[in-house]
Image (tube, rainbow, N blue to C red):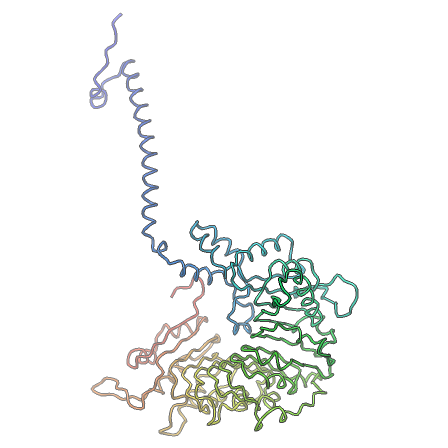
Length: 566
């Protein structure tokens, strides 16, 4: 028997020689060895590629973000904006997005460490009673534990759609919402808090909750002289505005002994108070608002919603001598038959020289419903240090100049008006004549103006061009203009032509030359969402080209929607 001889490998691989059985065995062994080596090399390559990717990640700019900046990003990303536009004046964060916080902490170890060490991310939460479950309560208490000494915030309210509002004011047997087990567990386990917000509860609820807070923590007081954490609360929000129970609680319809007043239960360290009073539309009796002067004199920030009619709110404002940030939402209810009929307050007795002067108010928000009736009362207020004003008038569409009437009433058209008043924001519907009149009547050096695009720009332009020859521009110190909430149809070029009309100019050798007096308006922001107005802006009319090119005015657009091209 002839023994098979192995064929040369080169013959088999390169010259197409026919293999014998021995050749096949040899090639099989070599193939398996090479496959094993390839697999091993691939594993090594995969590991090398992974290591290379890890090395490349070290160069990522995100890796070099300082911890302080990363904390600020997490802060902004997890903060929940106010649900209502009217709350926008309150820049404080009252609630965190729990899903966002959880996602941030799962990205990587560093992000988790940074998030866990940022106490402010875990110090503000909201609870809805009675929907708060035991599991949710456990989560909130665990998160409060990560606050690491950061002043804590708790906002709680009852569901707006709750069919069974708290009826503790009837003094019947419970259970009541204000004695909810989950709420009590939060108040006891999460304390101390520095800011508390209560919504859709009644005055009786408030007294019961404060009573529980003080009794539940009494056993933890170390010495008889220690200040209870409730008395260290600095900010308090009480919203009695909504809810059927607030309409039925008789608290506001009768005078209270000091020991029974909810205001005597206020924290000793309170510097910020938001108080939304109920409408009580079906109650024609005199409503009682008796806030002690000692409480009001400590306030730096005060927000009051008062729709009862009459001047009774002035009895509180006369003591706000240290308030710097003031928000007033005022209304008159005479047309509904529920005016504050028994309120016979002598306003002149509250003021000196006919005026109630609030010397430290720098920021003022006025939201007024029924300005014609309300100006009679706010006319005694004066703000000699005013810097910033936001104003909105409602239900006065048939009146010629409600905004002007409000501003005139509080002395902003007077030569004695604050010369620090530089920023004005006009919110809501305003007629062109009203806007032109109030801007032309201001005696303060206003530099920043924001307004909704509810006025007719063609009529406004006509009024401006109709001014006597040689007249000074209205608001001569204006430097920045912000126009918001454009309607679907709006003649944008008329607005641009008005801006152009403010610039005194001529031509020299074919080029535009600016003339004295030079106008300071150099920045215009247009907050546009509607497609029609947006097209007008992108078309870039001749007027817009002159403003941007020859006059050097920066005209920019805000208001992009997700997915929209710039």
